[in-house]
Length: 618
Figure 1 (cartoon, one colour):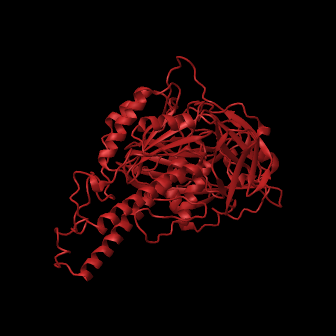
Figure 2 (spheres, rainbow, N blue to C red):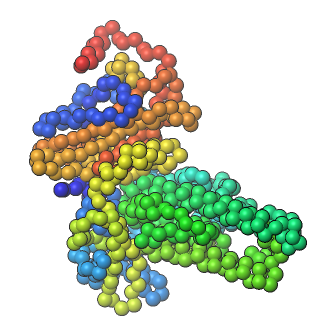
Figure 3 (cartoon, rainbow, N blue to C red):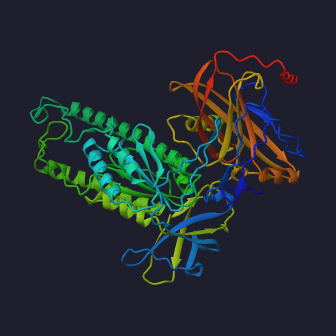
């Protein structure tokens, strides 16, 4: 079986070669690709079709394990923590599960700054009317930096402190560092796309006033809320049985809150990974949070830091870890609390626990011990996430602006190594990677491994789970995904379009997995979907699937142009936001983009000399 990888450093010219669809489809349907040997002949374009300039796809250098090439970014520093930039290919040894691998790709990535260069934004190219894309529009030569402001797991006072520290950093931000800002609350929001302009970023931070998390016990800060009057337990007004029941209920409540925060956090990590997958090179995720509710473990075990109960997140955790790996994301966790001391000695603390019991003697010692253990667990989680993804953790320091600066500097200079694994058994298990160098005094940091996911693992999932994953990506609440790059022309209703809205997709074929079978043909399956929104509410989803069986000469032509997919939708008069999506049905790799369309109340009559529209084929 031959797989065409999601990334191959291939630049192709985007050409639309689409046929107009016929009937609108309101449920997933299968479209038939052209006959195996047929040439991909472009259909005549509608006079109302938008201009179709040539566009360039540059596939990201993200290479998934299932493409038979594993990519590792390696940060090399000396004893003073300074970047080492003179290492050569033969200075490195790569081992997978203890077995040495042959390095096939070796490059050094360094910041590229141009003195006096104008700050750029990632999306500064104006497309023709009716044309939409998820292709990153600007050439960003440096490692990408994403700041994740975690309001879900951080109290309001610490959010305000982080905001001020971010502004302090931006005032002295070096030139040429592309930064994007995301906000994690009950959903993930993109506050600012990639830009090297510190003034734009400062304005975003000035407008951000923080979010109150409903899933924290004390989202506005301060001591725990007391559930019983002072002395109610010690005086015997509350029986031991009632106290145990209350403690059990409180334990379950905290577990439920932590469960939701963990689920939202894992969902956000996957969404960030999908959003960054189409950008080439390393991405540094600077995650500023007060409490990290999960521990990423290569053996797929998850520990909730605030509750000793059992929750199984193995599947979700594997998906999130795999997505981070695919997108070349290194996590740099920063503790939003700065240098912390025990809350028991805070002036606002009453000296009692949640149940009104005085914290004296053994209770005081137990409370201090429990709080210290929880803090250590949070810091261990931060360290663990950083080490496993090739980043660095920062805690017990008040200069959060310095931690941000150090994170970005650390992830800006790195080596990229890639190899074809000798082990061809794609069993989904975690494989440990070791990078060694004979050069003395050099410290290497890199992600610790990857999950050897089978190429058919997504296709083998049940349809319900596949639909849920696509539906999540098609939500306007989710940042656009760039794993599968495409461009789309949206044509409003007309007599030429048979009074339906037409969406013509042109998908980057180099990111689609083609499978060579015994019949000598290249097989692929791609779904395209459109979800319409009016005033922020979902109206309807249209989806269809194209299955292709291409002869070698046809396959060659497709790889030199684009993979076509189209969708026809019926909408009443009004203005709509459309979420466009495409997905490789074999690997689950997907891309999304936002579009707009206006449907007029009445259709203009055709000109007297206009040619009648072609009759529909039975």
